[in-house]
Length: 147
Length: 140
Image 1 (cartoon, rainbow over the protein chains, first blue to last red):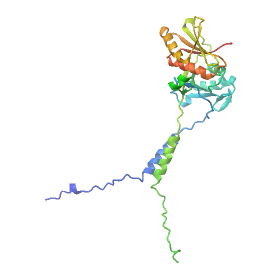
Image 2: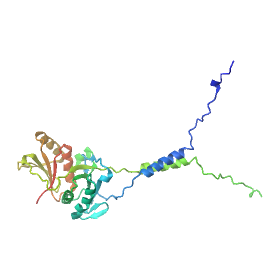
Image 3: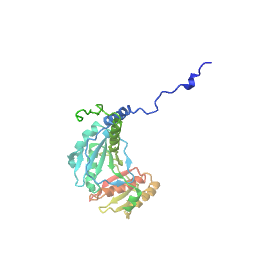
Image 4: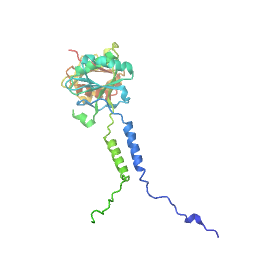
């Protein structure tokens, strides 16, 4: 009778996870994340955010958003540059003609008097950029009840 | 002399077994320190310049924000003014909107009122579902 070799054959595959390729996998992931990371070019200004419960996430590409900062002393920053109130329209207009989808995010300190915000919105209207968001932080209902 | 005969036992290869640990450590570090900056806020579309429209008084409800943060409601036609707490603005506007869907919520803010009070009112107006919102500054 012939030998029934099929059953007695031993499997030669190793039971261990190949650890030599692990480093390659990890470095590949690392390099992917490093290359795909985009650094922000603008510095945050120190402001106290206003809170709102109706805060929405703005679904807009980063290149379509320009931030207008107003700190508590009433200084306006656009792209890290101090901009006087009367020349905001002059700064925003070329950005708007370049990109019609521009959204202006007003990041104002919560204590800024309203006439300064009003000046900014008037300047934005003059420049044609009418899509505006008032940047706020999400507020919970418990906090809201207390104010 | 026995001291001179001792052989160096150190391997001259880079230890590859720990390489994966180092790489993953770096990976986890970058993953956890990355902050995604989302854009959050209250979106509004300003009227274009010279696009001011005349609106009949019955289609407007005014919310007047005073410097101390108190809010006065004035319904278009009547001169009657009424101080309301923040948590009632939403329900007032909801009932008004149900009666008149062309209603415009106009937020009139005092020039010296802090920005946060105007945001609080805008928040309530947004929560009530009104989509016709007007931002104005109180004239002296």
